[in-house]
Image 1 (tube, rainbow, N blue to C red):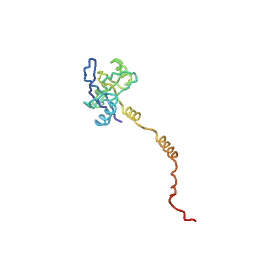
Image 2 (cartoon, rainbow, N blue to C red):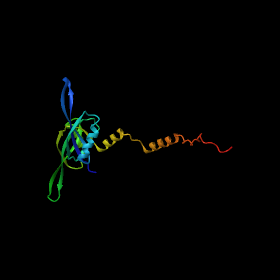
Image 3 (spheres, helix red, strand yellow):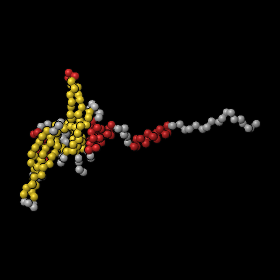
Length: 187
């Protein structure tokens, strides 16, 4: 499955010391199927934790791979990797550039982690590593899990069992009472 990544930028105001108001701009990266999906996912994800914000830009990022490491690193590095491929027809080496994203604490750590991920299968050159302003990368699965946690979702078997218990607990409908005003014909 091909993954599309969209950088979503938001802007909001924050009060800092001396009651001054500061404009804050933040960038997030969302895995989404379209610009509209990226916008929706951005609002869904950011609505609870940010003050009133304005979504100012959505940019599609052409990324070959996004490596999410479990190292508590908060800096995302944009890495340009050039694969060296030998072209049989022209008998020359060809360089194909791709962009990847990885989180790390330093440029050195990003380089070493990227080198480890790429391995020695193909010839490549890591030509650029630059820090980005991206604060967080939100894969598609992470958003779906957040929706499930926030929603009022329960297993179907649990809902059916609860409905069955409620049906058993309801008292049977009482029989219609005889009207006291009727007179008996038997004498």
